[in-house]
Length: 114
Image (tube, rainbow, N blue to C red; front, top):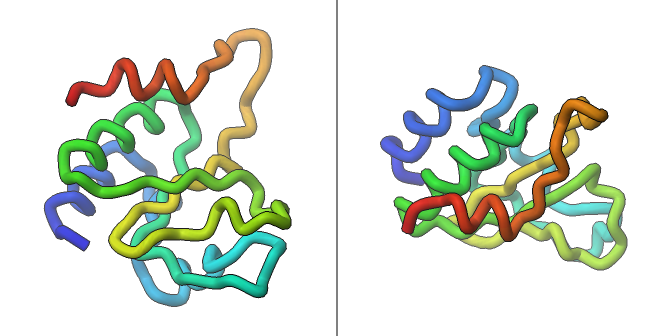
């Protein structure tokens, strides 16, 4: 993974929001369907919508694919990491409430510069 990409992600995430070590990334190698596994190249765990926007902008700028994941309880393998990509884990975004707007992926991608 490009060290410049990692540096930029570190600037927008708190220390617990970026997993780079093999041991930390291995915990995200599959969802509840463990028949298919792949250790992600990089794991990001944002806590705020603005962090998600920054992560998507940075990954787009570097041409890095992004796979999203919730709590990892899915049984379809839909959150399986891809080679050379970032796994965007949304399980730390637990502050949803009346003061947090509903944001759709389309909105986030539309706002990310090309």
